[in-house]
Length: 245
Image (cartoon, rainbow, N blue to C red):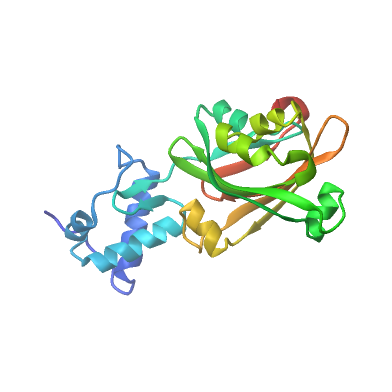
């Protein structure tokens, strides 16, 4: 096997990262999977630690994803996630030809802090129910979210969500067959350790946070959500009302 040549004065792991980055962008890994660390170490004539550092750089750049026990894969292209008056997780992914799925992490009861109280238009300390979930597009993780609802109206919602794995279906089961988006606030930032864990991404890679408030047909706030999108997997698009339906 011919070993790749290196340029003097530049660390080898940086050069390897640049070479592999070009291979990824030029779609040279036709099956979407990179060779093993052992194979790459042989290709470049270096040890596996050097390869891991180069791969880590590509992962931080969002070019590849590392799955423990499975290998290193070329990162999928961006999913376009439309925000409008009728934003729906499932509809957004199906529009992209992807199968939506929610994984329930936890459902809890608590009380509204100042931010929740403002958005839900309830007094501070009002009882709420919260759902924590991870959103999937097929096998790909795209979001981690926390949803809050007034407990007096939506006490049954956690059980409905556990049964349906759908916020829309759970709200319908609680007597809200339709709802619209009042506001969405967006912020780019670094993830917390918890968010990086559930998104299965490095804590050094930025995420996009949305805070949203949904209202029922009577303009009463019913849901406040904080959703963390993986920055290298999702492109958020602010859509005209008709485009989001």
